[in-house]
Amino acid sequence: MITTQAKTWRMTLIPLGILLSFLFPLPQVLLDVGLCINFILTFTLVFWVFSLKSIYSAKLFPPLFLYLCLFRLGLNLASTRWILSSGWASPIIFSLGSFFSLGSLGAGIATCCLFF
Image (cartoon, rainbow, N blue to C red; front, side, top):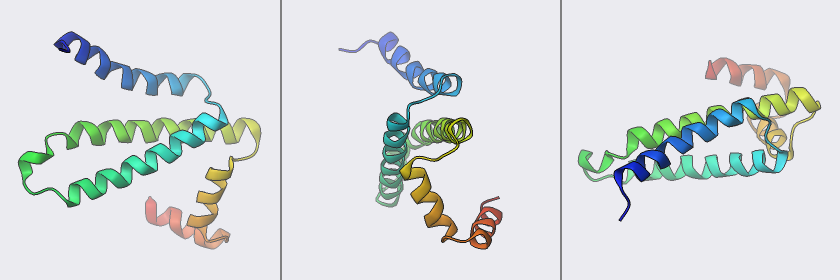
């Protein structure tokens, strides 16, 4: 049986790990794996929300959404740090950038304007 103190400690490790990724640079492999895991979890969350039958089933949604947003924010900061410090992006970041910009600067600027 897991005690309440153990559950609380485990729930504080997730934000603490995200904060540590703000302070210390992540290796490229860990960054790529984190991006893949984030995309998988995001699509899983979207499909889970679409399949809910009642509002009572969504008690887990707010904390899960918060942790996914914090995880993505940490990955964005880590990938920006990686690009600015090394001068090049990993293959996953480069592929995502070329996919969303459609290979042209004008389409990339239009996409950024739509996001912001």
